[in-house]
Amino acid sequence: MEETNELHYDSSNELIEQRKRKLRELRDLGAAPYDDNFVAGNYAGELVSAYGDFEESRLTASPVECSVAGRLVAFRGFGKAAFAHVQDSSDKRIQIYFSKEILGAHYLLTKKLDVGDIIGVWGKLFKTRTGELTIEVTGFKVLSKSLRPLPEKWHGLKDVEVRYRQRYVDLIVNPEVRKTFALRSRITKAIRDFLENRGYIEVETPMMHPIPGGAAAKPFKTFHNALNLELFLRIAPELYLKRLLVGGYDRVFEINRNFRNEGISTKHNPEFTMLEFYTAYRDYNFLMDFTEELICYVANQSIGTLKFEYGGQAIDLTPPWKRITFFGALKEAGVPDDIVGDGAKLVKWAQDNKIDVTQSATYSKVLDEIFKEKIEPGFIQPTFVVDYPVELSPLAKRKKATGAGAGAGANSDVNAPELVDRFELFITSREIANAFSELNDPIDQKERFLAQLQDKERGDEEAHAMDEDFVRALEYGMPPAAGEGIGIDRLVMLLTNSQSIRDVILFPQLKPEQQKPEQLKQEQQKPELQKPQSQQKQQKPESQKPELH
RNA sequence: GCGCCACUAGCUCAACGGCAGAGCAGCGGACUCUUAAUCCGUUGGUUGAAGGUUCAAAUCCUUCGUGGCGCACCA
Image (tube, rainbow, N blue to C red; front, side, top):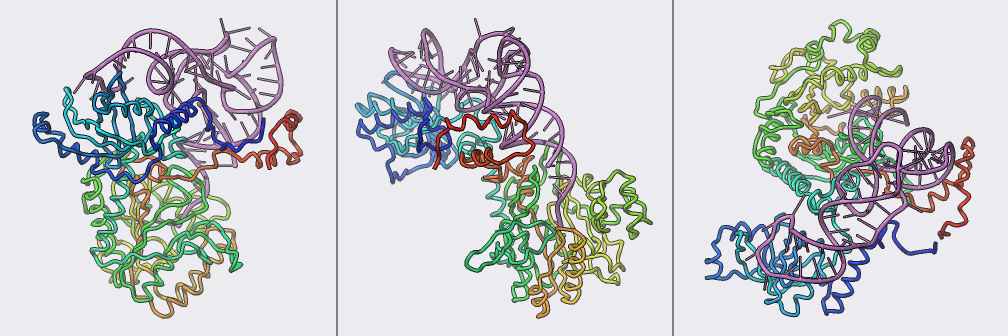
């Protein structure tokens, strides 16, 4: 084999060669197959909705000239005529009609077209005998010759790996995928509209943090050369947004990526999109009502209803939503009263109930584990769980010792400073939102950071790190505030009935498709102590392999 | 990280120890109202990779790769 400048993906199979040949033939015929600046006057969708109902006689009486540009997605050739469909960004397709009689010598070019080519056409509208609105083409240009065959028209592209890796193909051929991402866009727009209409301003805070904070998670590390500084991709924007509250913004929000160095699953992507918003002079009770309004607004604006199916389950977002306390939920699920508060008993109960609890688990982790195992699966319809234990919420405000806190409806555990003003919203057993009254006591905050540091020393990799500048900010005074985070990907999953987070992220994280030959070579040369002999034999044909420089 | 499953033509899939196939796409031909166009003819494969078992491997075994699902991990 000779050294080659081919890409690592096959770019020389027969089908591609045939298309390259047509490309040359187009050029020989005087076409410019990668032409530029074709300004179409119309979109397919616009033409279909405006003229789709017109009678043929009407289109003949007052002809409609039009032009569209898009991808050729079907082609049916006859001897001296051809029908095809062009699909454009209006997400509709319109039929076009090529006729030798009309196009003359230009008609030859249609013989060099393939499904997948991007073309611009102009002509006038007419109705076929079957009543389909069609452009009778008087002229066209090949704007981009497609060299790779698209998947089959009928079965389409199903291979999920190819769909994720080559999302561009997925988007071309699978309309429901385009629909999902169109909905995603409407959902984020609705969120922005809702918040902006209520006086919130959108901000952007750092993605690269010297101290990863605002959540309990393992961060990605990176490095800034000029500053000679280790940095972390952010796990949450929380601490920066609260600095902005100190700075005087009363209502701020950010919709952006968070990064967490954890496993990948149908519910987890290493980078995911989070909405966080903060409201000064309000508490978490305000946020519960606000969240109902926000999510209902978003549902109405995006899918136009509050009642829909998710994975075969009927979901109803009609407010008000159920509210239950953390310990109330535990009690309801049959966790005995007396073990709560007693670490040893709690661990024993968890183990007795076959809940996996590691040796190093802290009291709060065990509680959390029991909750996730026993309680969460029950929350199919929207449910607020309120008043979490303080150990689980190092950034939330303690519950008032008196019952004076507003909105006591669901709060049966007042008089409990070991609790915090916090809720989580669950829909389809999944956490959709997490919110609390923000801790603004700098001394308490510092102590909680210190407690987290102890957890860290005990081996809890995800314990919060001390952020001294954040404490300093609080020392200047942060107004009382309520803050909330909503996982956008999971919200989009819910509203688009997507079972995997990869179906709502355009380019989900995957391992590299192909190892570079250099890497492969290195690995083969690695001395493997315990490798059986049969493995080592693989190295023999090395001399026949291409030398790669 | 662990377990199970998958990987066959450009795409969607058969063949499950005995000659690697179909449909669509493609290519050649016919065809001026088709729309999964039709009709005739036809090309296309290192069966994800490497080893092994066997007279014979897509098929059985091992290792590896990638993906899916589940588990673990996961404010």
